[in-house]
Image 1 (cartoon, one colour):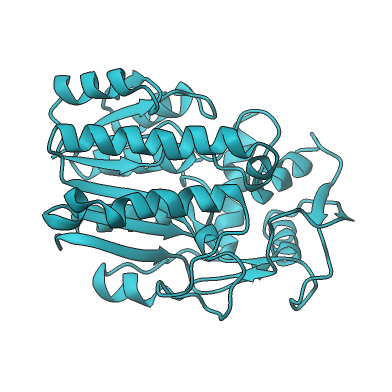
Image 2 (tube, helix red, strand yellow):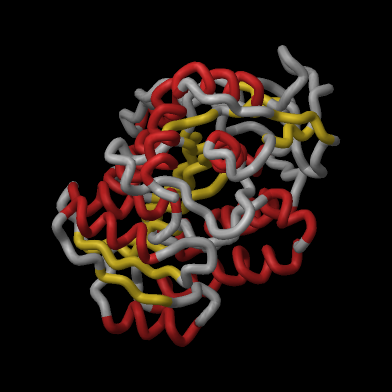
Length: 330
């Protein structure tokens, strides 16, 4: 089976490409490298012993997408491409709508044009907004608190309301919680360009003494220590969930949470990182960020029951593997 992976040079994408190749799939990567690097794919090639088919392209480019589908046999699409910073989306909402929603629209149109019926869309737990109950199941109310989350809702709605995808397609919408960690070899991991947007890359920068402190955005939330609580999932578990979703043969549109079912606070994560890796991570409390919520963690039972997926790695594993990658990559 030939799989098109959009955003395949990014953090989740590159790990997925590696595991797809190891599982025997034929993979084509499409990425504009706006927040990633071909180095990750070179390392995937080194680990797999296979040359990676790569096309440098933007999902907003309608002509390029149509040429891509016309020139290549594509059986399925795994869609990761998009901007992903909650904070940046609040500051630059039009940029996010243009890139994420318009880009996804062009991709879905190309799939229809060339009769591609199998899609795994990597959505986000941000679609749930401020939870009305925890843990969050897939039937929870949808109400994003930031443009990034709203982008994911808009893309989900395009799929849920389009008759092409409703009829005889196989569409899996995966609401991903917070991936951290790295491949156990330490060769690929989270390596965003510029100033990191997510917590773990900030922790790594401080641990390597490139930054002085981690900024903790608020310590007055209604949580056990006042800092925000999230469901952190190891990147390799998240990838396994995507591949199991790809292999799930049910027709129609299915929605799954990919998380562990357990929440850890910002301070929990910092303290665990320090304990596991024997390094110091200074931090400071700063005002809350717009769009953040107190606590979000998954009810992952649907994915466990239908996809036979259950996260296996611990928070210790996530911290250890993230630091292993950081130490090997300056």
